[in-house]
Image (cartoon, rainbow, N blue to C red; front, side):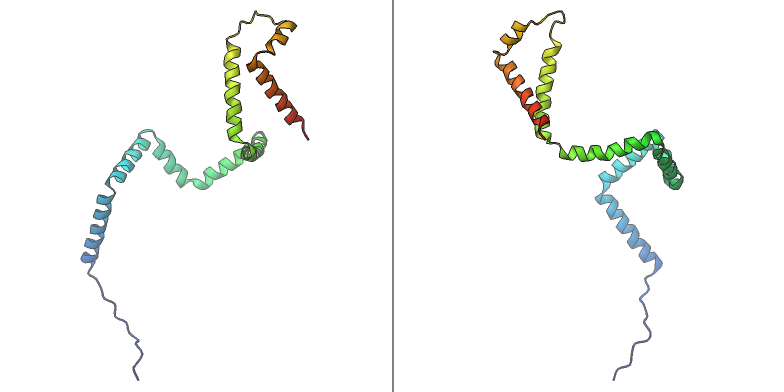
Length: 155
């Protein structure tokens, strides 16, 4: 029967050969990612010029203190209602039908543009209101407003 292997002799690679292989891998990676590295250097230079690099470095170094200060600010009474409403706002935005809202906002913008061109000294009589109902655009708008109010009043 064969004897159990008790000693394992590992192949040792000379330190210089390992270092040369590492340098070769790094050189290859730099060559393959030249554009990204140059953009990264430019980005770091811009951050440094604006003083943002020092700020980011200090923020990372003192992250516990910075996070503590931010949380202390958020816990103040003047911000608590804003934070509560922020979560409700995100839920509300999820319920909105954006396509219909976009259509309605375009109509609203058109109406505001028309209202901006009116002469403020011009008066409208009851007879003018009745005549305006014959205008298809006004009639369509009033019908849309009535439908909106009807929908808003439903329970």
